[in-house]
Length: 342
Image (cartoon, rainbow, N blue to C red; front, side, top):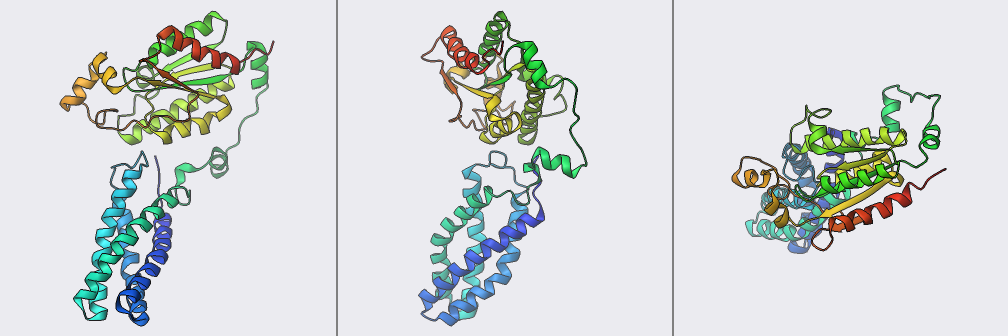
């Protein structure tokens, strides 16, 4: 889970205040024709909006909407809610300082247009900054902070690779429930087994009943589910095994986490691109029916988003590609990546 510190919100409040105040000063100056009035309004709002912005950030960290997708929609909604708060504050300050409610209204309305854009860009910029977010800490930093050090063993990965005769790899299948991920993953493993390739298949339901049986289906727990699976895959990769994983993995951020944990060189992504309509028509487990009736909440494709992968190695269009052909396409890439060392 993300742990967002007070320091991050304070830093964001300061950077936004600098941008916002300059905008207000110039707008007030332009509308009143008096740079002194513009300066007064700008300086007055520094005091009020620093506090208001900080409180707004603390409120939004408790709102789950769009939080774990880090979606643009969350940033747009935050922009709108802040703009309502900020504009009311500016209008009142401009009215009090200029003595004219008309000036207050004009300044408030003018800044709606400029600050909506500025605030949105500010949110997007801060999303790319790690400051104050502890869960973006690298494995190296975690080791250092906890006085841990990796144990060196007599048998290395290279020893295990020479024994197995092929490179390790993580083949990750992503797609909606009912898309055919598990079917394809199972067939790919069978073909690799027949070629004497050492494999292990991780599947959503199987992992949920064991390793991750303490997790629910909240956004936080779903991300943690994927993180743990990626860590397990990393261990299998160290053992020299080809890991095959079939999970919905709807979020871009979670897929980025997987790559960061196992390494991009060890990752092959397979997007099983079956339409929602087809998946729902199949409804093998009856999950879509339950989701539509409200029995299941936050179901991917119904009331939770699926962000289609644009950077995966293979996209299987199940409407245009048969199962055997799809497996052949996947094996073509996988076999080239695990070329024999013997």
